[in-house]
Structure formats: C-alpha cells, structure tokens
Length: 178
Image (cartoon, rainbow, N blue to C red; front, top):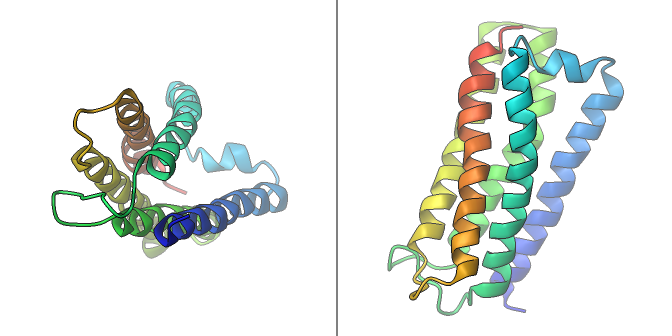
C-alpha cells in the first residue's frame, strides 16, 4: 500500500476514534446531553439534521472508499497541480476539529461567554470549509471518463457537506445560544 494511502488510513482511524471518543465522553459525562446539545434548535430542524446525519455518514464511506480504493496516489492530480496528499490534509482538517466540537460545546454551555460561543461557531465553519474544499478537490480529480464510483463519491461528499456546512455551521450554529 502506498504511503499516502497508509497516512489516510491512520488519519481516519485516529481521527475517527477521536470523534467517537469525544462523543462517548460527552454523552456519558453530561446527563441529558442529547437535549442540551440541540441548544434551542427547533424540532423540525432536529429531525432533518438527524436524518441527514445518516446520509452524511453513508456519504463519508462512499467518498473515502473511492479515494482509498480507486485513486492511485502516483497518478492523482488535483486541479492539475496537487497530489494525493491534499486528501490527507483535508481529512485531518475535518476529523480532528470535529473531535473538539463536543468538548468545546460543553465548555461554552458551562461558561457561555461570547468567546467560547463564537469559538464553537468558528470551529464548525472551519470544518464546513474543509468539507467544501474536499468536495472541490474530489471534483477536480482527473478521472476521465468519470466512472460511476466517482459520481457516487461526489454525491456522498455533497451529502456530507450538506451536514457540515448547512446543518452544522449554519442552522445549528444560528440556534446555539447557551
């Protein structure tokens, strides 16, 4: 396996464990965490976001499998200039800040000062920007003719962006006012 792909696996394993670990920590140490974390988000948006979380997770697997199994790091060119390593940077920019979201959110709830509240919003905006960047980079992959799996990866990444950009960084952040 190419070293860039190994790095992508390591980033996914460590970053994924960090995200899941932060969620396990937050839910186990804060009674009623699920309700508190919605932070005033109307019920209809909670339902939409929850449903899209499942689609976003499936999308994450779709684009990650495509990147890991269908792209050759030696020949991958992004925007005709950059290499496969860009994926590693973008995954790290998504996963590690995502692991910080729940602890930072609980810190903002415990001490609802403007700095902590805006830190949560800016963190989500950063994750959303990294997700959009991943979608653009994935679109730029020179996979001509485009294969079905590339289209599935693009759709999956778009669903992931819908969650990270719209549902998290815009909708949830707008209602987050501890």
